[in-house]
Image 1 (cartoon, helix red, strand yellow):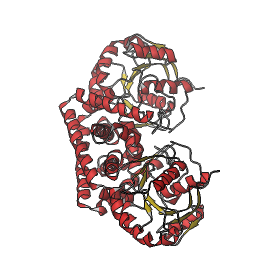
Image 2: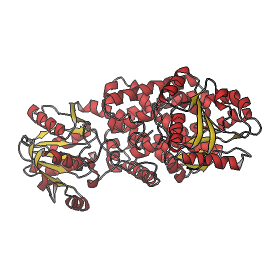
Image 3: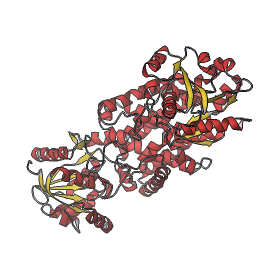
Image 4: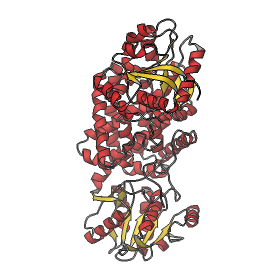
Length: 307
Length: 307
């Protein structure tokens, strides 16, 4: 086996992402040891019970002591406070990264608390499920997914290269991007789609003439995918929208503009407009399958195909 | 084995639904024989090549001759013309059904062409994938999915019961619903979600500052599910929106109202509103999993879980 990429890794926050990182590190002996910390005592108890991390600390400061890599895996809105708490306890030369879905805000919140000699390299693995908590993680979550690193002004290139090796060891493909562009790209590919899914599920729930049980029973025809997206962690997503406000509102504006145009085509009975639009969007799907970011199985893995 | 539910079945249109029906009928010897017809010669050729149906006819009239059950599996906008063509060739006592996503319009378009002594019982299996065409079908598509039957005024109860037995044989659970309510329920659970997904994919494609390749590469974070929905057959969906106009526009109106409220919460930084909304929608997902209409596997079947 090759040498570990880092001697000691500290995971601050023990939800879906951190727990998946631990299982992915474990399967390949990627690092020397892993300490974990979560604010909730119940979460720390669960982590100990299921064997998550080599040790569970009783404070974030304790967890990061002597760590070569510290991963902030808490909701975006909690990053600043955690950074402030751990700042004085970081080992000189350590790397601090995060897994937040928004990058400009994390950089503003965390950056000021990073002491001289510590490498702060924001990151964002584009992987997840609708589940949350320490028991939701699994080792293959990052396999063939992207992890975006967002080095800040003057980031140490050797430290960035090492973090890249680490994420590749977890199974991900790594690219670099600047924070502004990251937040816009994610507003398109993730944040706005989530808001729309949340909205649609809320509408269904509100509609008195269609019962909840009907919505649930007959969900297979499209709505089901929305509910999966809209089942994601509420705290995480609240923070995403509050901290990527500008880009989300811009994309939402474009979305409603397009939606109104399609709505008008429906009202006017303009079938040609609808058909042309739907044909164009179909081509994009083809690109995603070719890029290996989804499966083309006819049932999306729901049932086995047998003729 | 029990006796076939119908002696001869005719499938008019040979896309995803009809081809899946054929494979599902075949696996259990549900009917005596199946004849198929599709308007396009290329589709008929493909059907013959892959062994879809026991015989492929050269006209819809020929396909329905002597059939005990005729299934109209063409886009909603084409139902009326097909009904007019086959009307004079239907066997007395035969049942005609359809698989269209909209019911009020199909009843108006098909009903007048049904001769005395033929049972017209509209239906709608709530199952599908984003794929289309004769090669996209598979035998398990309807397993554990709902099929809604929408009997019209004066439908023969024995004929309805027989069609129910047929759909149960295909693997589906059957319920009855009136046409007006069907069209509203489907506007919520299927039609509006599809329009929204199409719109979001279109927005992503239009945005010049985010390249198509970025949208495709980074789609795993939510957008991917939208592209799958938005890859569905353009002709089928054009017809759905043109023929279920009223209910779709009503639900769209509610959707934009809710979306504006959430947009306002983001702009004002109202985290409590967002958190409360996202918590409520999460509960609906739980109901869908409990109702057996989706899997709770952490990765939705994308990869095997291994720790």
